[in-house]
Amino acid sequence: MSLDVVILAAGQGTRMRSDLPKVLHRLAGKSMVRHVLDTAQGLEADRLHVVVGHGADRVREALGDYPVRFALQAEQKGTGHAVAQTLDSLGRGKVLVLYGDVPLIRRETLSKLLAEVSESRMALLTVTLDDPGGYGRILRDDDGDVVAIVEQKDASESELGIDECNTGIMAMTASQLQRWLPRLSADNAQGEYYLTDVIAMAAGEGVAIATAHPSHALEVEGINDRVQMARLERAHQARIAEQLMARGVALLDPARFDVRGNLTCGHDVEIDVGCVFEGDVELGVGVRIGAHCVIRDSHIGAGSVIEPHSMIDGAVAAGRNRIGPFARLRPGSRLAVGAKVGNFVETKNVEVGEGSKINHLSYVGDARLGRDVNVGAGTITCNYDGANKHCTEIGDNAFIGSNTALVAPVSIGSGATVGAGSTINKDVADNALAVSRGRQINKTDWSRPNKKTDH
Image (cartoon, rainbow, N blue to C red; front, side, top):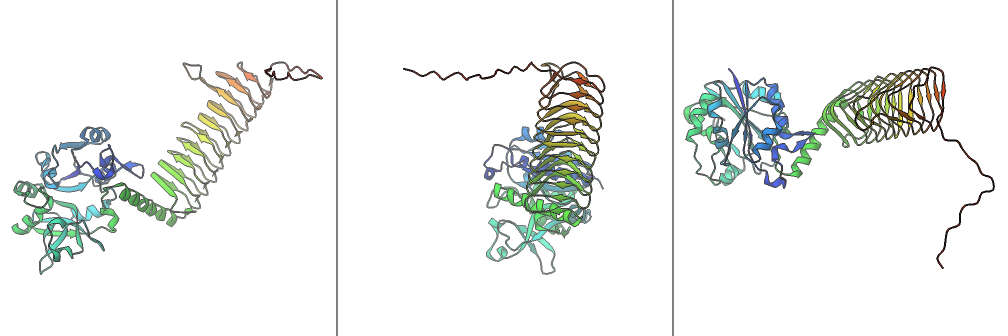
């Protein structure tokens, strides 16, 4: 059977106290609704539907890179009304209903749920909670079969004592939905069309209602305010931390650690406190990351050490590199084995050869450094002429003295030496010395001018 996934994302989320539609608030660096869509894509759904309402244009724009069919719920009249907006575009197979503000639902849990669905059976995801406040309760008959769901505001005193709760996530066939949704009524405390009312309709028709359960209640917890957002963020990060530690990664404090993308680590990696990993990051065997580093879309090769407070973005370090502290590697920075970028150094679109060093207080951009180059403190490559970028080439074993400006395009030959304080705008031959300074003048027995005083 084909699969349609319907994601409800029309709510305003007033408790977030934000102009941003609720489902676009980010958890682990990614909007909540993107988490749900990525999980749905992992189910190999034939069609993805997102029901939008509040901030519809912003949600459409934010999800423009997904193969999504959008349905507009102009007035928020309940979950049943929201799903009804997709009826005309559903296929003839299974339909899975998800929520854009329930970001941590797992693909494995949904696969179990979908396996229960047929024309004679629908499936409901339930969870048992110590504190079920706010959730609809699952009503079962004497044989243990599900017969209805009652929302908390409509529940009797005895029904409020039930601890098996509705997650809102359910699956059925399209033909079942097409029979049941037009029969929904808004005769309830909220005056809304509850999707949960289809459960009683299914039971009345003799359609079996199977149930499945998440491995952890966090999977089905929705986010309504920033307190819940923060709690789920930490819970999500704790789960990632546990997975990494199980694979041999040493986290010096798992509670102060954030992954906002995908982090792949070899064994014996050590990560200090306050580090953030964004996008796709790979750390090789034995890499050590100092405190409060931010690493984005980068590969750090085996045996490298990243000193504290460094930022690495779109860079590749081949291995046995030393970076920082307070270094910034911008996109296109590529370090060969054993290369070093030291404290307060910024690089961009640069290749640093094997064993070369840019030790401190320098900017090197749009440059190619050979092997065993030594770049002194305060060196900059002047790569931009106000209109275009130009490249600086530095050959093997070259030595660049401190406080040097290399005005690109320029080439420094292998084995060449540039004297400290030079401004170099002409090529330097192999093994040559280049010095470009103003002449120093010393005056003996010279007195400073006296400061004038007002009389």
